[in-house]
Length: 412
Ligand SMILES: Cc1ncc(COP(=O)(O)O)c(C=O)c1O
Image (cartoon, rainbow, N blue to C red; front, side):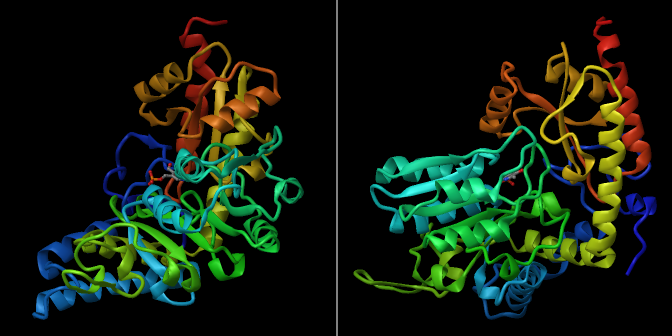
């Protein structure tokens, strides 16, 4: 096990030795040398179309791709690598579940429950299915502190509930949701639970068997891997019965003019040439995370979160969205500066080399809901999001700029 301290930053070429504070990790993370090397090695030494040829290079490309699938299965505690489907990202994974499971199972009168804290990619596919099938989309609301209470979910589920779609960690307020209890509630009424792990897998240990989720989605690029590779985990019993999501090469066993036999899982869901180079990078990213281990990662990120939240609480006219307690943020803090538009806030940060994001962070219902609860006009926010390579120095620099923002805008 490697010791996790500020030296880890040296392993990330884009930020090493550069005068930037990269605090937009919820959007995407930077990539360590080992991930870049794995992608480079794939294209320099092993590239061919995987799963197709029987010559040596194609076999190597296939092995790299399938080894990455096994690494993902081990990383999230799946029973078997057959339950791991490679997609482009979390959004595509959610669409796969909605188009394939949702379209074949949802009927008029059913209910789909999504939390109000979801990213749009875990709302819109369900909205589409609900409209198409005559089902109802219900929102599971949180309180002002952003907590999604399992008791509230218990009150709104019924025998009509077919799907519950919930994020494990919110990309705006950073809270960890009790997915295990929510899975129990879903199963008690015969519904399936789809969990969004986009903001969790790089930051906390995930075990899909322990959580007992039916589907679990995440993106490689938010966990130090390249863009263009994502994951959908699904329980075998569902994946085997689900129809394909996309059609084309490599997802069939046999095709004649009048008959098609689809391949077994997971290939049934991976039409066309796959992204083996990115899969090689994803495996390297998993190895990188394992080198440090979640115990150190969680401790470091929570310590940085605490410095950020405590520092922000002391700056007048800064409002933290969701819980005011540092322990609820897990590396993600969205905030507003009274009297300054979030885009101006982000611009001032950008001018100082601090990378943060402004807007609704693809979670407009959450912004509107929380604003309504506190009786204010809904506005977007600015967000800081932390990864394992961030340092106390970066957080201090962030706090210093934050304390100057109103003054720079000419507000006393
Ligand atoms: C919680 C959450 N879900 C889903 C997504 C969508 O991820 P992607 O853009 O990689 O599909 C994001 C991206 O920010 C997210 O934060």
